[in-house]
Image (cartoon, rainbow, N blue to C red; front, side):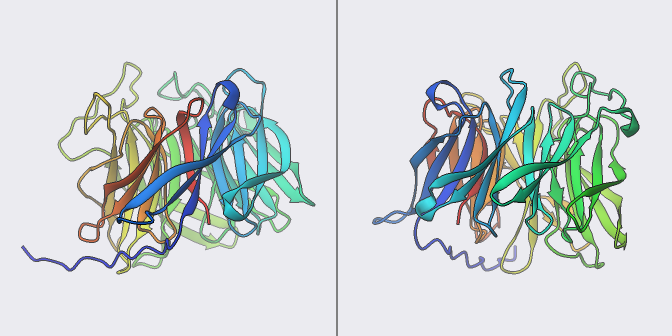
Length: 404
């Protein structure tokens, strides 16, 4: 066996770094954002993760956080799953020390689950799972003003009940993201079995383009673009299928300023080779992949990481789910790496630190957030270095993001 020298993993975290966690909440802390702090221990080595604050946002079911680093603004998306007819989009100014100050609030459709800032920071797009819609908001003079609304249930979109009827009875957009050029906005739709594609006009308005269609029963949840062009000069797009339990890879072609096309090159299961994927009576995978991200080490090698919920690969009492890592080849194809512990049950969200050394994982059913460290030999996030138990009323962590 040939030994390879470990990568130099020198963290840039000279002091504590804030993290923000949204939670499906209850009781006095309904609408909670928890503020955590992670960094080296003052003495004795190792790392510490502790809660330093909490914010009652007066929302129903916080599901997603987006940090716009350019304006130092944190956006909260409220899913409003507790029977409320409306959700909320809230903007917070991130102050020194990681504290938050509300700057704007607007009533939104029910079911918001993802947001992205686009149009050179002039607008915010929100995917509404429950309302089967995409809405955009203009950022103007400290306010959020509704810009556009796309209802995917309307006749012109051509929706039909999907293969997994209980989960695909309606369109269910689950994420909104930009391509690397910033000219195209994508919306993976779990209920529609496609990714809606829009062109971003100069005035911030969106123009619909032909969608990326997936096999029936895929259930597109989240996607990610490669951080740079592959060996052939094209970017890659990777898409998690929650209902099928897989990740698909597509070569991305920009045919013109206003055209983008996707060509599938492969599809990979999110479980180890040889392990049978169990499905429920409705045909959906019982193991539900959720989050997806790409990390790149100091040598330029990139890995794709997908979190698995409900696989209990590392224990059932208590349940410990997994992270599947794939090495990305120059062609864009994926090679599975050893399965890693997620630290607990239902890793709904995870985020990698700016220096690429640490990963924070929001464990929805364990009521905790853990921080994993990347191994310089294997390039895998295989060492848990810190953990914090979420406080009462904020146990169901739904999203975690690193502050600055």
